Length: 167
Image (cartoon, rainbow, N blue to C red; front, top):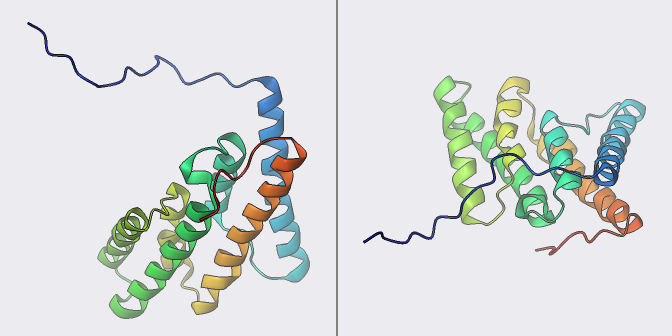
């Protein structure tokens, strides 16, 4: 007698995206990264993080995903940067402190339901750049909030539903 399992079968390949969805995603990613980059260059203030590139991909290719919702995007980036700054302040600039920062930030994102995988690279960015506490607000919080705002307007203009929930 065989036991039945509830393990779903996975498709053999990744899903195929339509040309329309590809164009919508491409223009959306261009829009948000373009806006953040333009503002950065014009204001002389860093507003675009490396992790925002992968956040933009999620926002415009899978806007319905939990990782793309405002709670996860803004909360994840904020938490990861905050944890990294705290660990850097208390433990110093060591390889093991960086590992602790990424692990701790991941656990906190999971516990607070703000999991956003691209934000997991923020502690690495913090340990490489060695910024001051202002980095938590500019570019992290401001940039993440701008991404959500642009995504909200853009998806509305394309008649797509975003976000599925705010908090």
